Amino acid sequence: MAFRALPLAEALAGRGHLVRMVLPVRRAGDGAPVKCAGVDIRYAGRPVAGLLGYLWQVAVLAWLSIRWRPDVVYCFKPIAHSGTVLAIFQLLRRLGLFHGVIALDTDDWEGDGGWNERQPFPDWLKRAVSWQERRSLRSADAVTAASLELVKLASTCGARKVAYVPNCLNEILPVTAEAGEPSRWPGGGTGPRVLVYTRFVEYRLERLLESFEAILTHLPLTTFLVAGTGLREEEQELIHLIERRGLTSRVGVAGWVLPEEKPGLFGAADIALYLLDDNLLNRTKCPMKLLELTAAGVPVVADRVGQAAEYILDGKTGLLVSPGDVGAMGRAAVSLLSDSDSRLRMAEAARTEASRRWTWEAWLPEVEGALGLTGAALDLAGPGVEGSGPREGQA
Image (cartoon, rainbow, N blue to C red; front, side):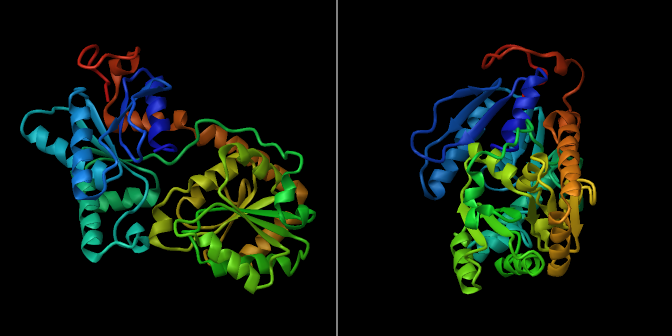
């Protein structure tokens, strides 16, 4: 929600549309309405566990949405709360109680072959997730999809109208190699520095370390820093594997990275690795971390899987290798680490490409076209008042 739904909402509000976000409460203490960059944000329900808590939050989400009389209901994720709200609005439309557009955004494949494979759900729940995802894609008036593979899958599921809208950035942050930042690398980062910025779900940990070893064979003074945390504490397993392979003097694990730490972390890295096993989960996802790296001017060596081939122009803003080829990744990384001029050229080209192409402002016409927000709707301005005010373009 923070990296996709909210930036899109803010961009739409900046174009004059009246926008409200309605979110389920995740923890005690949430719930007070807020205003963020022109977006009215409301919270629904209470953080109650179990089926009753889920149904309560869904009911409040739908109520807060319908009472605002929107022209467009834009559901983010085809499953769970938002997928159920989408179904409720379809029912309301059949009953003549809603006459607007029902749109859906998808940025991952949730069902079989996707996140279902990584979730500890019982089989019946996995089947329910897969059914709800396909039903939502098929029944929405319009779908925005974050990857080209998702566009294909949505069309295969019977989606009526699909628009490609990848993840973007609101702004390109400055990057600074702050004093003392290389100290986060093992040994103070005195040799070439390779960053891995990750959530660990995209690859086998063994392959990551094999890639490190392929680089160390040619550049033994290289140090590596793995930044991020896994969904199941994979970083702890990685620490054990590092110790077992005798790489503790070369590889460090930084854990979670705060937003204010990113500029210094990116600025201190010579290159980054981005591993993607060739599977449906990775072909459909739109990796925000990869975009952050390229926008920060970090030359990236990545597997040629899914959106990596969109975010990286091979040989210009980074290097792409055959997926799973440890030797190819090692050779590409060594070539970049040995050529400072190429790294500088790629860094500048990556930042230029990100600021030109990968911003929400650049892709907003695709979103507006999918949602049917055209003509006079673009001229609307003002905060809007619940139950009154202009009607066109309110979402």
